[in-house]
Every structure is written in C-alpha cells, then in structure tokens.
Image (cartoon, rainbow, N blue to C red):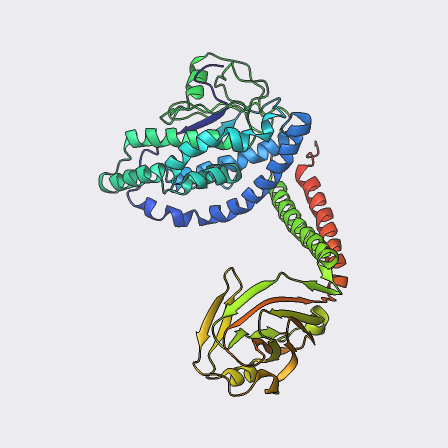
Length: 496
C-alpha cells in the first residue's frame, strides 16, 4: 500500500465568500440536522452490531448496511463542516445520505471485499486505544473520544472543546474581523478532522487498515491528489447518476466506492457495484426498525429480570430486598412519606400490584419496635421528638435529624399503627398495601435513644402473574414488527 493511501477519503474546500457573522448562528440553524442525526445514529448503532456478527461469521460487511453507515458518517461530516466542526461553508447541508459532488465537503470509504473475523473482536476497542488517546487531545477528552468514536463517528468532532474547537473558534474570530478564513488554520483543522474520520471508520469496522499516525493537512486528501495525477482508469458508473470523466486511483480495491474531490480536484464517480440507493422511505424504515428493536429488547430484558426475581428472590411467598443496617443516636428512625395508589386504575391499585408487604427488623441489644402508620399520624406522634428521617438508603444511609425531646408515650401505646411488632431479636410486620401516604417508624420498644437495627422489606407482588407474560408478548410482537421494518428497509428495489 502506498504511504499516501488510506481507504477513507476526506476532501473539502473553503467557500470563497464566507459571511462574517453567520457562524454565530450556524449551531442553531443546524438543529434540524442534529435531530435527524440522533435517529440516524440509532440506526447506525443497530446496523453496526449486525455488521459485527456478519463479519465475524462471514468475513464480509453487508453492502447495504455499509452504504447506510457511510451515508450517516458523510451526513455528520457535512453538518460538522457547516457548523462547529470547521465553519468553512455557508451552504446549508443537504438532508441526504448520498454523496453530493457540488457540496464543499466530501467523504467516501472504499468498500472492503473481505474483513478479518479475528480483528473485528479487538480493533474497535483494544487496537484503537492509542488513537483514542490522540483524539482525546483533538476533541477535548480521551474518554469522550473513545466512547463516541464508534457510536457517533465524526459527531464527536463537533463537540468543539479540544484543539479542533479552539482552532475553529480562532478562525471564526479572524473571519469576523477580516472577512477571511485563515488558510493555515483550515489546512490544520482538516488534517485533524481527517484523522478523526479515519479512526471513526476503523472503529466502526469499515476497514481493517490501521489508521496512520499522520496528519494529512489541507482540503485535498492525499489519495484524491494521487488519483488526479495517476492517469485515466476505467470505472463502473453508478446507474443512478450520470458518469463523470475524472480518474480513479488504480491502487484502489475492487468494489471501491471512490472518493470525492477537494479544492480544485473534481470528485470521482463512486464505483458502487451492487449497492442500493437509500431512499427516504428506506431510511425511515431502518430507523423505525432500530428503535422498535431496542425498545423490544428493553421490554424483553425487563420481562426476564422480573421472571428471575419472581423465582429467585421469592422467599415464603415474598420477594425480599436486601438488608440495610440502620443506626442513629436519636429516639426514632422514620421513613419519608410513601404514597401509594394516587388516582390510578383499579388494576394498578397497591393491593393489586404489591399485595401484602412484609418488613423485618432485627434489634441488637434492646427489644425493637416497628410500626406502619399514616404519615399524618406518625408526624403528630413524632412532633418535637428527636428523630432521624431516612432520606437515602445508600451506604452509609443518610438522615435528616429534627426535634430535641424524648417521646412522652411508648411507641406500643401510641394507638396509631395499622401494623406493628415489638420484641427482642427479629420482628416482622405483614400489611396489606392500601392507598394513602404511609410512614414506617423504628424505635426501641422502651422508648430510649440510640436505635440500632437491620431492616429488610418485600412484597408478594401479585402483578407479576400477568406483568411478566404481558411484557414477553409485547417484546415478541415488537421483534416481529422490527423484522418486518428491516425487510422493508433492506429490500431490493423492483427493476422497472
């Protein structure tokens, strides 16, 4: 391979008459593109997973998926070029995955006839780590670059908090006061963006060729320049576009998509071979299929997790949570108000969802008391009493301490509890969940200060009897719908 060759071709040219001020609002004008790209990257993520397994088992990147993913990268690059990634054109980016020879920013990636099934397991995370570290400096955070390079390609180049963002800002200020975009900054920024896009394509499994640690500056990609001087070559034209006479790099692999020309170098016509045009309808179908697939996967995982909890965590009919150790030097521990069943359908009433609730508490040296009362009654009993309200069950638990007095009535004599238990060792209360606002109070049975206990809670959750199969059915239906949409997205257009 020539030292100047890489299968990712990035070319661009500066608009001759850039507006001095339009860059101030381009980020706002590009919002519609950001919205569309958010959905396109959803499809990119799903199709990349499909491509991963296709390469792993067949050694080939499915061509239709390859063309779609290149289109998403290309669309993102054009938006970055227009907005915060370069700011070198005032021409609004087209809403298209296709190459546009008349737009000043171009991206093409040569289609690989074969990819290594072994490399696909490691190149996108392990082998690319050195590049992620370099890109972290370019983009402003190695972790951000490493995390987004595969999932968002050049989208990370628009973050603008690293070297690229600083240089683009300097160029914008110079443009504001002089009316000219500094050529030296443009060349350097294009070199940085070209590096980002090469790594993005490698991390997205589109090539096995390791990205060079080389800054190819300027709007013209070295491969494009080499192709322009290599002499004419025969090229298979795209059936959907008129052929152009520009030469193609004879060193390109068979089946290459070609590359677009930069400043002063007209773009070549891509050799698409068996590729298919991604129409708006097919793109919408693919994005919808990806969205439905991810939602269905989430619903299916939720159904599975609930089924595991129903069978694995249930003890004596109750699904119990973990035990939490509580300790306070006050006279009582109270939970915040727990509201159940406010204005919900009958199927979602607490007694239908939770069923019976069980709380266990184990005292250490002193007999423990615990009781469940309506929040208003518990607040009245604890008014003025030094107590700790449990605000967070993290480790260690967090409390909000209030009051300063000792209780005037022993908790067992308060007469406000809908369920209560007291005594040494482990105590438990079982209570049928009901609508309303409720508070659990833990105290020493003799009303003394310093409460030390370990608490666990659970419920019978009868709703699982219908919730698990319902979610499973919804997941299967969603999977079926996504399959239909994928068929629509990847179907071959009828030949007329």
